[in-house]
Length: 450
Image (cartoon, rainbow, N blue to C red; front, side, top):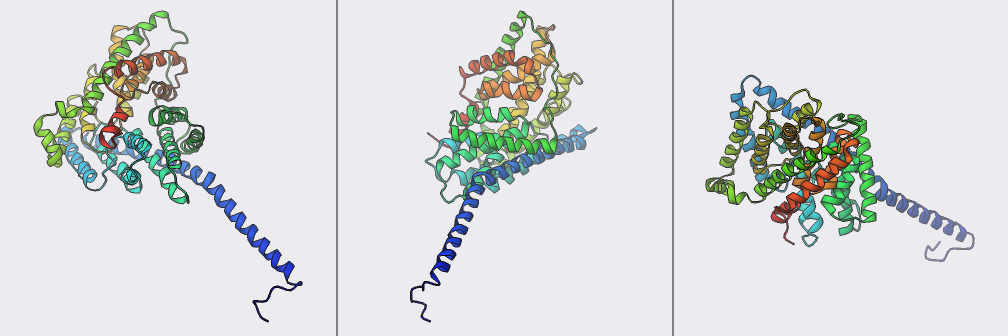
């Protein structure tokens, strides 16, 4: 039979039926793919962000404890370990993992606000950056550097979510923006176990605006990342339960004002030092930073070791343990802790390796609370710690809403909402008189020029 002949009346219904079946199958496959891209892929990656955040947190704790174990009873060994680890970390950053340096939040801001650069996602995100962020920050913690993991987790979360853009046939700037914001929010939520702060952070600090569709994607990612964190790490409070009186006397306004003043000024000074290191760094260090990075890293490591030995180990690591013990009243810190931790954070950040500012900044704030308590001994120290952590973080980031929400969730301190809001707003405003918001300024200085 000639196949070119039209179908007969007996075969026509069968041909139509087969065509309808094939069309329905194609429609079903397209529907399944659409559902996968719309829900399955972002939800699955959000679960992955939560898992990586928990694993990264455990590895960071192990790295710091390993450093403490190695120098226990022989603090002189820090003058060997810290320089070597800093040199190794900087060498890896410069040669293999450029774009992973710092906290990672400026990179996310740059990607969102520099749409004219088509190569920015390739330079500042991807599997290479994720691996470098985790590996090198762990090396830094093995060397006792004062760095945190929360900012890097934001960068990692954004990078992981951004990788899913390759599965979409029509990738757009709006889609990339949604994925970056969702990943950043999920990263912070998984790092601190603070879902509300993750959402506020992405809106206030990263995006600095509010869009309905973007926020819906972001909230979904936060929910799934948070569920993963709850499943793996439990329903923990980052700094434990804060214990404060049910009511505060009107005189409590004076500690709030003093805390805001101190935190605002010291936070502004930190921003200025980080943004204008060319003005205060000795000329030989500036030359080594550009031309002989290993010599530069050697000096950084020696300073970190010196500060740690000088303070009996108080300045090493992110500061999480010291802050938690002070908040619980189990281990008081020296009166100079805030300044020495501040100095160690500046030096560690100047190393130019991956590492965040959140936990160290919170620990600086906890140290400042001891100063305020010295002037107002009647005020509960845990309440002052919450105030100063909020105020100093707000001064550095100039994101007051994020700051008081994140500390409130980390300490379960809902009874201090109004005082923390006041401290955050006053500290951020005072800091803004002297310096711009740190993360945005770093993004403009290092990654894009609007």
